[in-house]
Structures are given as structure tokens and as C-alpha cells.
Image (cartoon, rainbow, N blue to C red; front, top):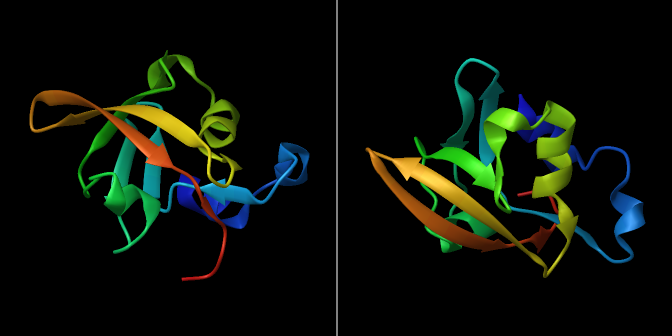
Length: 108
């Protein structure tokens, strides 16, 4: 599951030049179905941005998820804490843009 790689801050987090961060959402990825939000911990970055379970992430910073590799998705979602990532979300047939401010990694 993608969430494990994001939450564990896989290789390369130290290269951000600051505190590594993420969006605090558990995600599921499959080539056939794309990137789906499975869980959004209360009070985390994703919850504060309005993400909810069932949301489909269709683009990250303007890049369609369908054109991205698993590794590219992980790299696009993580980054220096305090920076933002722009997501295009599909939910119940509606598209919306969401900006999520990455939070420092910590156990919750």
C-alpha cells in the first residue's frame, strides 16, 4: 500500500533540506483503479484540506496520476514540512482542487 511508503518516509527524505513531511492520509494505489484515499486521520493535513475516504486523487501538482509511476507518486506527495502539494480530487462525480500543507512525519 502506498501509505506505508509515504508514512515511513522512504529513501530520499533527507534530501529535502528540512524536516520531511507528508499529507497524513492512508492511500491505496493500483494501476487499474488509480490512487484512492482510504483513511484520513482527524486533525492531520489531509483532513484539514477537506480530503475524505473515497476521494480519488487524479492529479498531483498538475501531473495526472495515470501517467505517474508508483515511485513518482510517492516522491510527489512527500516533501519538506510546511510546503504544499496541489491535488485534483474526484469525489461523487465532481472534480475539485485541493492544496495540502505537508506536516512533519510523526507517529499518530
